[in-house]
Image (cartoon, rainbow, N blue to C red; front, side, top):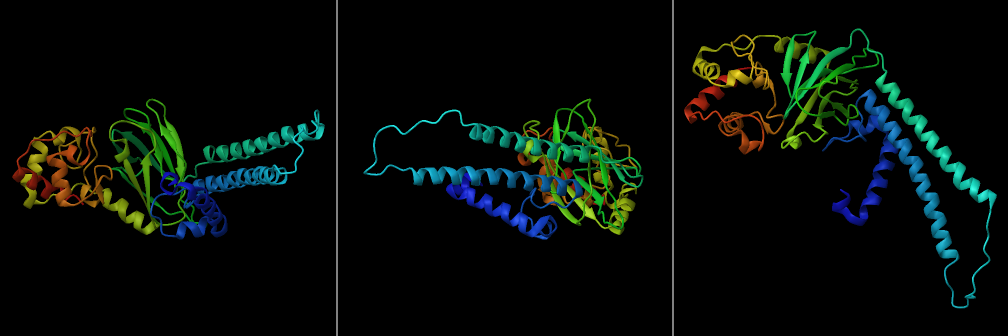
Length: 348
């Protein structure tokens, strides 16, 4: 945005800070969101981070105003005039008051910012996990997300479903973060801060959404060619909606005799080596679980909408949609792909 708007960027940033302070986090989160923003918190950890951000911006903004004001005063007050004496003005050395001011005040500012930040970090990292909290294991792959709900027996990909939390019924979601290959970073700006997924080093984070809706996230650590298209979606639902989603996800794959040809293609080709479909012989773990693929809004980790045409194009030539992805082209005929898509479209 700074490059796009050039000299107007500082005014836009100041306007954004002022609006955030005036409307408050709750009101801001209710506004239409075009892109994910830390200034629109909709979860307890994100709201805490938002408060810290506003405090830090207020402190540094105050420093800017004071220093800029003194500089402007000095430039105007002591500017060169036609009748000025060109001799050097008296030099003053060893002002204890000035030395103390520019030493003690910055130290106090740094100490305050440090203590406030440390308090927020430990408050988020050491938050106790309630017994009724939702547990989700998040596994980062090149270039997609795997979500496992160990207590519910659900495995899905790229689209995380969680219940909304209210003051009457707090329902936080605790995320156990793992990586299957390289470094990744789980980041949904409106729900929590960035947390890295490092191979052989389990990590933890949590979210407690206070507003229902769809929240967008992104892998925030460069992890390879298709890092930019390693997107994720978090669906925050009412408890009733979440319970209905859980019930549907716990069912085995739909068996429709009308698409038996497509199922046979899936099970007899390399698809079954990478993907799993509950209730079939496909037990692959290298790619996303496809048991309920048709219930998802997107494919290819959010790179495209989940439509029959996009699914056809994705199977025919994955690199045309996501260059550098690790899914190979199956070299199937168009007729076989149509049959396979018809089968996958039944997997609600």
